[in-house]
Image (cartoon, rainbow, N blue to C red; front, side, top):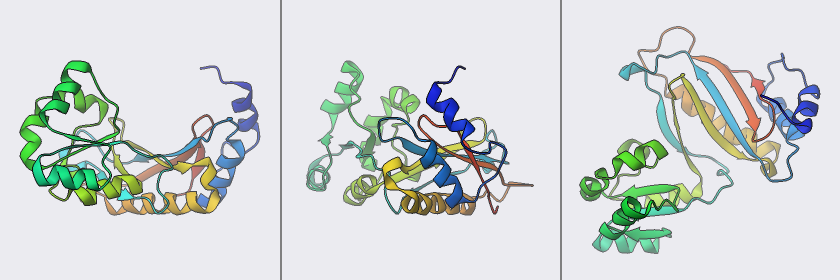
Length: 228
């Protein structure tokens, strides 16, 4: 893969082999984020677990102390009182059969998160094949299948993130934007890292956290120390 001039310059600006303390690592990421737009800062954590084993899954949600810097569009599938509550709580779209049909027939995906009440899951399940690959399928574990739609909407709008293992035992998760500055990014990093450590499966053996890297959208990865 050929990298651009700015990326190449960024790589030269720091020690690729060094493992930095979180605050130092964030400083390096901010210094190497050269793009003209407000880059997202992402965290990548490689874990010493086997993602093929059900008892070694690592997954959870948390509201980052300083949010993600991105306003998420929320779709709520609900009826009656719950639909009214969702609209009042600031959902971007609220509906039932008509929105399910719109997704199914028109390939409509102008939303980032889908929240639904448990009684509507039968209907939502019909389009699971298109929602699943896009990471949009509601799930009780992520708090998106719930009777408390107001709370779910507020958490998503406040900066709730879901972290989960991919097939290579790595968790990829945003921790904010370049414009947040060092202090807020370090706070978000620490909150997410603590959550991942607390989510360690009982079946996990040996070293749990293998490596931690943070990087901006267009910048190089910077290695971070881990206490786990």
